[in-house]
Length: 149
Image 1 (cartoon, rainbow, N blue to C red):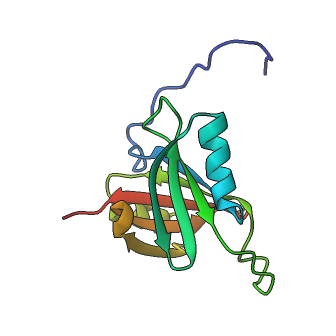
Image 2: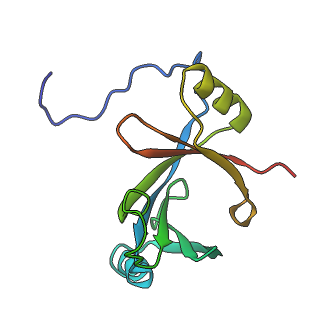
């Protein structure tokens, strides 16, 4: 392996893969400082507020970089609940999300590889149907498809 300053050279795309439709969409960060986090990104990095909404007691904001409509930072505003199980509620990085063309096909392929689907649900407020898995290292990964009319 050579350490050099050069552009990335990607290997050919694996178009035969059942997962070839995966596209990065967002990373979520959980915080008790919801307003402050949004303000920092919008004021210091010129991120744009795309959408805000509530899911139960959680506030959510989708913010995008100033010149990119293909990536979202999802801010998850939660209360600082000291009585909660610490393994369930954490702060900072929460999950990585990939858009897929067909969530059912993706879930079937994941199950065939012995990967458990932790949960799946519809999120009409963002027009998505989603499924979550855990990687072997404890990281949550979300797959999402556009809700069908």
